[in-house]
Image 1: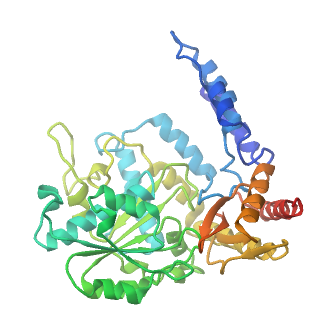
Image 2: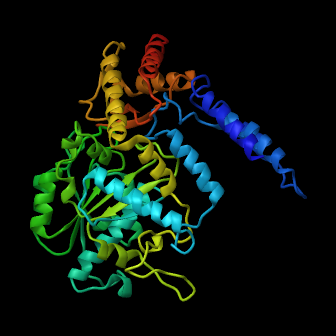
Length: 452
C-alpha cells in the first residue's frame, strides 16, 4: 500500500507542468466525489487510498508547481518532501526528548543552523511551530512576560486582568496574523497603537518615536517583507527607537527574513539582528512541506517562562538536560517538524539557500519587466524582493484579466487591494519556478488582455 501511495505521489509531481494550476472541479462535484455515508464496516486500505486519490484529484491545486504564484506559498524540495514522508512513517511525538531523542536533537541542529543563517544573536532560543501565526504567538508571549515582569507583574501567575497597561505599537500595514496573535494573548484591537505607513507599506519611524514617548511597558511589531509589496521597515531606525524606549522589538519576517541568507539581499533587513524576537515560515521560501514555522527569541529566559509547562507524569529533562520541545513551543503532542527542515537545509547548504532566494527575486524582476509589454498593465512600485504588484485600468478590468488567467489553468495568482483599488499580486518563492514558467505566465496575461 505504501509503495502504491508513493507511485501516486510521484505521478502527481510529474504532472505539475501539464495539469491546470487551479482546481478543475467545483464544490458540488467534490462533495459528490468525496462524500457519501460512513461505511458500516472496514474497507480495504489500498482501496481507500486509490479511491481517495481519484476523488480528490480534480480538487487539488498545483501549488507545488512552478506557475503557482498565489499568496506566498512555496513548493517542496525533494529532500524535504522525502524527509516529511519519513516523519509521517516514524510518527514521533516531538514534545519531549524522552518520546524521541532523534527529533529533539534534529531541532537543536536545525534551529542552530537557521540562527546562523539569519545571523541572529548567539544563544537565541527557537521553536518549531505550525506557521508564522504560531511563531508570532510564541514570540509575543515571551514579550508579554518580559515587559510585564519588568513592571513587577507575573502574567503567568496573575493573568492579564489588572496587569499594568502594555502599549502595543504596530504599523498600519501589518499582517493580520499579528493582530490575531495579540488577541489570543489578551491584547484587544482597541489596545493597539497604530502608526502610519508609507505607500510601500514601510512603518513611519517618526510616528513610532512619538508613540513610544510616554514610556511604560511596550512591544513594537515591525515587518521584514510587506505582504503586497515586499517592502522592509527601516529596522535599524526602529531598533534605535525601541532601544531608547526600553521596548521589546518583534519582527514579522514570514518570508522576508530569508533575505538574511543572501549576501546580495541581506542589506534590506539591516538591523534585524537587534530585535528581541523574530517569526518566519519554512514552508514559504525554504520550500518545506506544510506546516512549518519558526519562532526565535534573543532572550531564552522569558521565552521558556512564557511557554514551558510541567506535570508529574511527564519525563522531563530539566534546564540543564537535553531539549524538551514543550519548553519552547505552544504545542504539546506535536509532529517532528524539524526533520524536513533539517533535510532542506542540508540538501541546499548555505549557498543553496542564498541561490534559491536570489533566483526567485530574479524571476520576479523579469516578470515585472515583461509586464511592460502587456497592454494596459501598470506595475505598482519597485520590485523589492519576490513580490510583484500590478493592475489593469479600472477594478473591473483588473479582476477580469486575473479571472481569465486563472481560468486558463496556465497560472494561479491572487487579487488584493492597493491604495483602495483592486490589484494583482504575484509571489515567487518556489524552487521549481523557471524562466519558462515566467514566460508562460506573461503569455497568459497577453491573451487575457487580448480577449477583451
